[in-house]
Length: 591
Image (cartoon, rainbow, N blue to C red; front, side, top):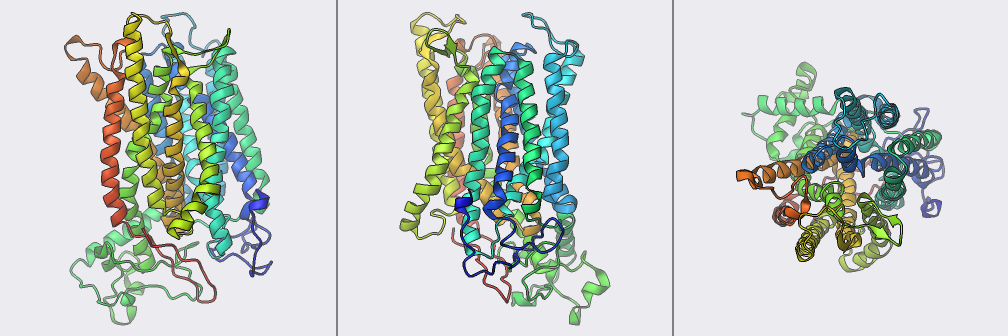
C-alpha cells in the first residue's frame, strides 16, 4: 500500500492538513508524518480481522440454529435476519457517540471490548456443558442456554455498532481533501477497505465454516474471538500515525436547533440574496462547529433557510436569543445534507434484502444440493459465499485499476463514474442475481420431481456449484453499490457528522434484513393458508416454491431501480467553502 502513497507535490513536507485533523497529541496534523497510506495498513488489517471474526460466526449461524437450537427453516432465517438487522441499526448509537463526544478512534477502541466479550460468551455457549445445547436429535435447549446464546449475539451487535460506522470514516480521515493527490487516494481507499472486508470474509466462509461443520462449534466460534483480539492490537499499533477529527458536539442538537429556529420564523420572508443569511466569518474556511468547514448555501429545501434569517438589525439576535432562534448557514446546510441523503439511503434497502439472502435462503437452497468434491470432501452450503468474496476481490481490483481509468477516458469524470451512477449500476446487477437464483430453483425443483425425490431429504443429483453464478453476481453488485454507498455517504455528510452518515448508510442494510424477514413472514402466512406447506416449508424445501420468493425480490429490485433513477436526478451534491489562503478540491456537483 505504501506504493500507492503519492508524493506531496508542491505541498511543503511540514505543512499541516487543511481539514482540521490533529495528531495523537492534539496538535495540527503534519501532512508528511501522519495519515495517508502509511496509516492505512493498520486500519485495513483491523477491518480484515474484525470482518473475519464477524463472518466467521455469522456465515453459518442459520445452520447452528437449525442443528443445535433445533429451530425450523423459517424461524432460523428470521432470527438471523433480525440479529443481522440489529447489527446494522446499532451503528446509529456508535456514530452519535463518536461525532458528539469521543471521536472515532476512542469509540472504536471502547466498543471493541463489548465485541470481544460477546464472542467469548458465544464460544462458552458452544463449549461449556451447562451452556451448550444438547446434541441429540429433537432435544430442545434449555431456556438459560438459549438466553446465553442470544445475549452473546446481541453483545456482538452492540460492539459492532461502534466499529462499523467509524472504521471506514476514520480511514478516510487519513486523506486530506485539500490535497488533490490525497483526494484521489481517498477514493481508492474505499475500494481497498471493502476488499479487506472480503479478504476476512474469504477466510471465514471457507476455513471457519469448514471448522464449524467438521471440527466443532467451539473452535468455530473461538477462532473469531482470537481474530478480534488481533484486530484490537493492529488498530492500536497505528495510533501515532493517525489523523484525528475532533468531535463537534451533538449533531442531533444542532439539527433540532435548525428545525426549531425555522419554525419560529415561519412567517419571516427569505432575503433574495443568500449572502444576507447568518454565517460566522472565517478566512480559513472553518465553521463555528468544531472540526467542520463552512458549507456553501444550496437552493434545495429553502424553508430551512429561515433558521439563518437575521431579523434584528446588526445581527444582535444571535447574542440575545442564542442558537435556538438563529443558526448559521453551515448549520442549516448540515441538516439539508442529511435530509437529501434519505431518499438515496432508502433506495439501498431492497439491495440489502437481496444481499441478506446469501446467509439465509442461499444456504437453505444449497443444503439440498450435492456438496461432494471427490470421494470424501464435502463443501458446506454456507461456504459457497466464498465465491461472493472472490467476486468482490476481483471486481474491486478491476474497478480500481481497469474500469475507472477506462470510464474516465469516456466520461471525463475524475472518478470514472459519479457515485450515484456507480450505485445505480450495482442496483441493476442485483436484479440479475435474484433472476439467477430463481432460475436455479426452478431447475432444482424439476430435478427433484424427475428423480422422484420430492419427499426425500437426500442430496439431489445436482452439484452445489450451480449456485456459484448467483453468488458471483451478488459480489459484482456489492462492488458497485455498497462501495459506492460507503464513499458517497462519507463524502456527502458534513465534516462533523461523517460517522452519522456512515451509520445511516449501514441502517439500509438493517432495514434490508428486516424487509427480508417481513417478506418471509408475509409469504409464509399467505402460502400456508388452508393447510398448505408454503413457499419455504420447514421440513422439505423440495415441496416448497423458493423460486417464487426470488421472483418477488427480483420485481422489487426492478421497481426500486426505477425509483432510484428519479432520486439520482433530483439529488444535488454538497460543496464546501474553500479557505482563502489555499486551493481546495471542490466536491463535484455533477450528477
